[in-house]
Image 1 (tube, rainbow, N blue to C red):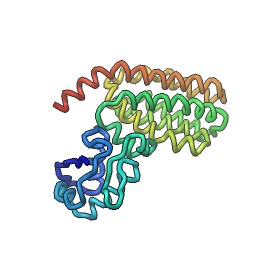
Image 2: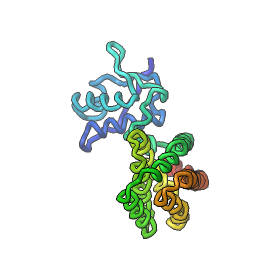
Image 3: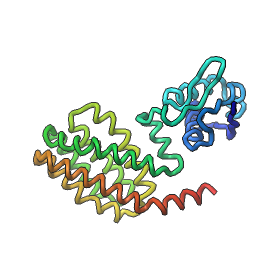
Amino acid sequence: MAVARLANPVRRSPLHEQVARTLSLRIIRREIEPGTVLPNEDALCQQFDVSRTVIREAIRVIATKGLVQVRPRIGTRVCSPAQWELSDSVLLKWRMESEPDIKLVQDLVELRNMIEPMAAGLAAERASEAEVAVMTEAYSDMEAATTIDEHVVADIRFHLSVIEASGNDLVVSTLRPVIENMLGSSFRRFIRSLEKTKKSLPVHKAVLRAIAEGNSHGAVLAMHKVIGRGAEDIEKEWPAFREMFSATRQ
């Protein structure tokens, strides 16, 4: 039975969150393979230079995300990716922070394509004047953005305002972490040109116009175009990003 060797003590607070994040990233990156049993509490305490309470809380956090299972007389065993709680917003964030994973990005694009256009269609049918005003303000901020960060923040607000206007709480809870992490993480890392980012404005404006006009079919089609354009931009930038990431790890 393999036992992982862990290192690099974590000293920043809150300690249990830092330990949980460190362990999670190692599991996600396969530095600790599925089926591996983590060191016992005493060993983890020494390696991270923290108390048993911190270790227990960190293990509890990653166990709730499906990364490990704690079993009597066996210990803490690392789970396979099939058991991970992939919809967990924090776990999704950690996965986006780990090594580049084009399959994850493609899966997220497919998920958005399955749900977000439908949400836009519902928003066209249900959005109040106040909700359309929120979308309009977010779009205006995208137009006025002078940095990629400003554009991304406004872009996230725009998409969240659309799904919230759908009036479907399950859609909101499913897509919120995907949008926040995919747009926030992916575009900040992959798309480094504000000029390229601004080219998405016309398709976003088409979504806004269709929703404001109550055109459900038009909103669905426009949102598909928004998602498709974003996916194309990421695929174009992927080789360069992968090379840059590999260079920083050396």
